[in-house]
Length: 218
Image 1 (cartoon, rainbow, N blue to C red):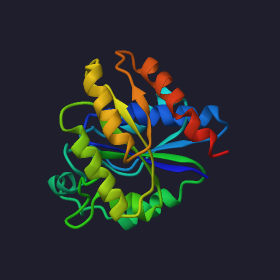
Image 2 (image 1 turned 30 degrees about the vertical axis):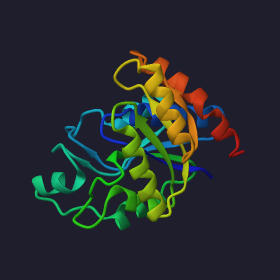
Image 3 (image 1 turned 90 degrees about the vertical axis):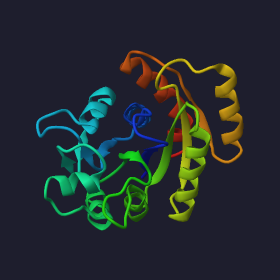
């Protein structure tokens, strides 16, 4: 049963849309995915978090493992609220309780800390998830993608593929093609998620990018 971990080269690079797109592709392939937000920060108790938002876009159930109203990384958010930091062991155990196919969205990049010695990548490694990396197309993304790949290798997290995301607007085609060319030699590039102002349109396009991946899971 496929169990994915959507991480990014930075914060605000389009992870939630990629998460929704992957979940939609899985649903259309006959799976019954659950979208999981490993840790949500910066959202009030009754506010819509990333998991709920992605679940609504994909038409699938969602779960949120932990939430902090304070913004930032999970470690400093917990400290800001006077709560004990989370642990990779606890979060992985919660992921293991969720049956079937899951699409778990991280927070920021893969090295965002959950406590003083563990990061979100340690959670994915303990839960034996397969990574999908959202690469926000902007200057520096090649370096960030390579660093993400290196930590995945160090933690023995398999990488299912990467998606190049035009998060902030149309990317210069020459730059986009150069990034594609460089990264495809090191990582499986699933395609480019083109910029779209409408989220539903973007998620529909993204689901098509994931069809080859989810169909090979059958």
